[in-house]
Amino acid sequence: MTDPIPERHPLPNKPLIEAMLELRWDLVGTSQQGLKTDPGFRIFMGRYYDRVRKEYSHVQNLPASELPESVAGYVARHQFWKRENEWPVTQIGPGILTVNETAGYLWESFRPRLISAFKALFDSYPTEIAPLRLNQIILRYIDSVPFNPETSQVPILTFLRDSLHTTVAIDHRLFSDDPNEAESPLAFNVSLTYRTKTPKGVVMLTQGNGINVDVPSIIWETKVMSSGEDVPNGLQAFETWLDDAHVVSDNWFFTLIRGRLLKIFEEDPNATFDANSDIQLRT
Image (cartoon, rainbow, N blue to C red; front, side, top):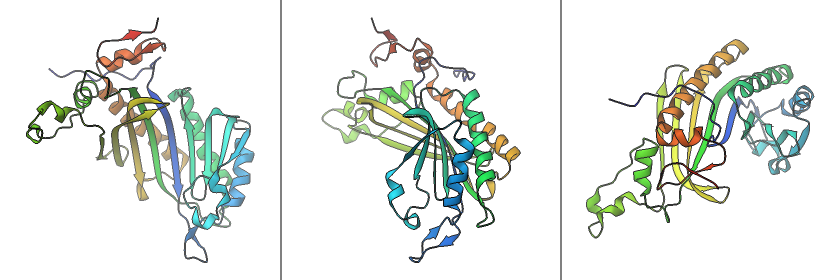
């Protein structure tokens, strides 16, 4: 009998690093170097800020803002923060807009921000200069759980299989001296892409080990992406896409963390993770 997939619910000790929506649109101009450009970007930048400044009052220019726009297509140039260094943040660049949130994320508050950003984009883009045609939309979540392969008694691939319900394996016969070494690579990175019907597009899962705020961790990213004709260009279609993509993301998230990890994430935010035992609380 398989484990049931948990229903979506808030997690007090959630593993979220960042949630992000990304919108891209066609670059229709051509620079002297033959590169695609966004001829409406400069006017869009001012109009967009006028529409979002009540929610995002602090402006920060990114290093890409020093580059010619013609060589920085689909690269964020400017950030608008709620307040200085306070999330959420919205970013824009030629052909690109994002809305990002971290620890304060709740879908119930994140979703309205995404809708507002979508409206602001279509209300402020100068279509008298260039048409606005979205060509890609991504809903992305990055999560992390502490795991140090050098100190854990649990091999990293064993943990991945038992706690994140993902199996990565290589033939143990490659390690004649110690077959158990097959479960303990120094590093791993796995990426899988599958088609989705609702919304039409793909869902991508990437898992690997790395560092999150100076802590050795397993980090995984879930992306739901639609491109080309499958991208919504109207508000109603956008809201439908958001809800459908969120269902896919939640289904993947709660399926992967069901069991022991879910119990940890449901605990008090002061709970800490120990790969060699059950939930362990700070004293």
